[in-house]
Length: 339
Image 1 (spheres, rainbow, N blue to C red):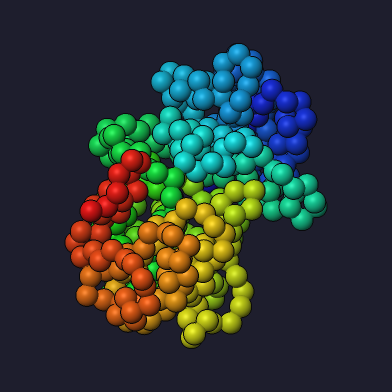
Image 2: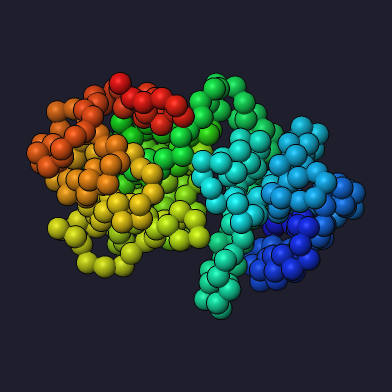
C-alpha cells in the first residue's frame, strides 16, 4: 500500500493545525502542505504533488463542494471531506460523495486524549485508503445508471438481519445498490469464510462500497457495511455522527452478533431506519425488530419466513426474496414509498 501524501485545505488556521497534528501521528501518512482556500490549494498541487486532499466544505470564495467538482472534472484526485456538517448522511455527505469525494469525516467535537487517539487511527486509515484509490475507476463509477441515475435516498439507515440461507439474497441486494445507495448495515449469521467468498466475488462489479463493520466507523451513504464477526455484537450509536459500535459482551439469546441487539440499538438511537429480516433459521432479531417497529420505523420480513417476528409485529411489509433488492431502493427513494 503506497503512503498517503496529504494536502490539508481549510480556511481555519486552528483546523489546519489540528488536522496536521492528527495526520502527522498516523502511520503511512505525510502532510505535504496546507492551504487556506481553493485558490491556494490549486496553486500548491503541482509543487506538493499530493495523492489525497482533505477538504473543508465551507470556505470563503470557492466552496469546498465547488472545488471538489472542479477537481473531479479537471484533475481527479482522492478527496476526503472534513467538516462539522459532513456528518449529515442525507445531505452534505451524500452530495460530496455524489460529486466524487472518496470519503467524508466529521471534524472532531471531542478533544480528550482518548478521542484524539481514536481520531488519529480512523482518519489515518481513511486517507491511506483514499491514497490507494483508482481514481479513473472511481470517476467512471460516478454518474450513469450504476451511480443511481435519478435515485436519491431519503436519508434513512437500512438495517438487515440475514442467515446463511440468505447469502445469495444479500448478494443480490448489494449488486443492486447504486453508488449513492442508502447507508446500509447487514448482520449475517453465517460462517465468516462463506460471507467473505460471496462478497469477494462481488467487489469488482458493484457500484457501492462494501466495508466490513469496524468499531467507530461513521455510517455513510453509498456504503454497505457487513457484520459477521462472531466475537462481537454490532450496534448503532448516534454520537457526533451515526456510528457503528462493536460490543464485547456475552451472546444475547445464544447469538453473537445479535440481530435483536442491533435493531434495539437503532430504536434507542432514534435515527430514521428501515429494518428487515431475511430468511434465518433462528428467531434472533424478532424482538429487536418489534422494538424498532414501535418507534414508527418501517419494517419488513422476507415472505414466508420469520414466523416468530410476524407474530410480534403490529405492522410490516412482506417481500419475496427476489423482490427485496428493488423493493429496498423503491422504499428508500426520496419522495416515494414501497407498494
